Image 1: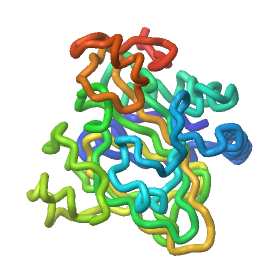
Image 2: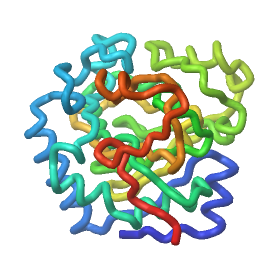
Image 3: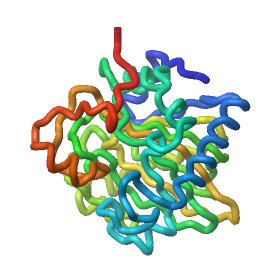
Length: 272
């Protein structure tokens, strides 16, 4: 696994809000990830979030239009909580250290992992932000996105608007049907150039949770599989948004409480 992060990569990420890491996984590691994700998805049988009854694609407060979003991607969250192989992969401290170095923080917690499967002929993923969905507010939060299949211009690769993370905020524009809906919130970026991020299987990207990003439609008869994980810098507190938290967890929290439950947001890296 290629977990080295160079100063130039950190500089690029901090400036642009994303970075692509080629050949993150070798051939054997890629096959291990694929097998683990396939097994975890079979075990889940469509259940989107552990402890919640909804199937993937149903409206859970994350997706505002369930019928449309069901044809954008299948989204299964926190596979690490229900599958030991995924847990082993997600708890790798080397990946946590990569995220910490890019974000410029001393400690990294998993917020949630998620498999994102864009089915054949799937709808595009419109421009959106990540962090406003989450139960904490931190401009340094970020995600890894690992390509399990080649992510191409034809089957739904990611796109980023470089530098947008420096000027976006925590107001949540959601993920709508219209690709340009986010510009109602951030009109300054309506004329900004975007950058495509095609990746061969086994490569990955990191992006800041406030970077405007989206993905093409899948214009092919094959699936585009990705395994992702959102990271919360250690020390964050509850902002009142439920997101992936259970009703019981939310009832036990008040705004400003530290999010440090190891069964929900495990610490996977701490700088020594």
